[in-house]
Image 1 (cartoon, rainbow, N blue to C red):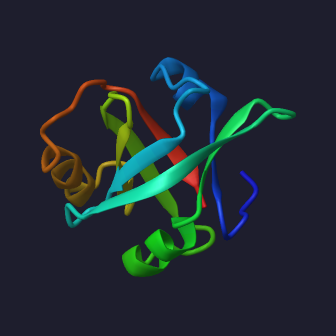
Image 2 (image 1 turned 180 degrees about the vertical axis):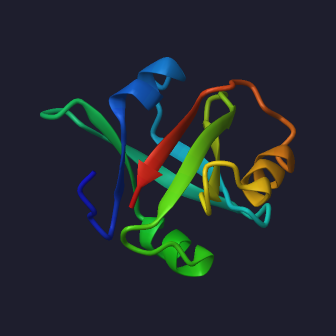
Length: 117
C-alpha cells in the first residue's frame, strides 16, 4: 500500500465488507488507549476508494505509527458515523492487540483488516 503521510486509504474489501457507503463523510478512530479521534472520510471517485484525512497525520504522530509499520482496523460500530478501532500489530499473535480490541466492547462486526502504513 502506498504511504501518503496526510491521508490513509482504506482497502475496498474492508469498506465493502463492512457496509461503508459514499454517504459516510465522517469517521471516528479509537486508538489503543481508548481515545476517540473524529476525522473526515473522503471518497476518491476515480479509484473508487475511501480515505481518511485531515487528522490522520496527527493521529499517527500521537500514536507512534510510523511509515512501514502495521496496524489493524476493526469496525466496532457501524452507525451514521462509523467507529473503527485502530491497534498496532506487534505480531500476528500479539496479546496486546487482542487486549486493544477487547477494550472496545461495542463490536458490531468481526471484520478485521491489516493495513500497512
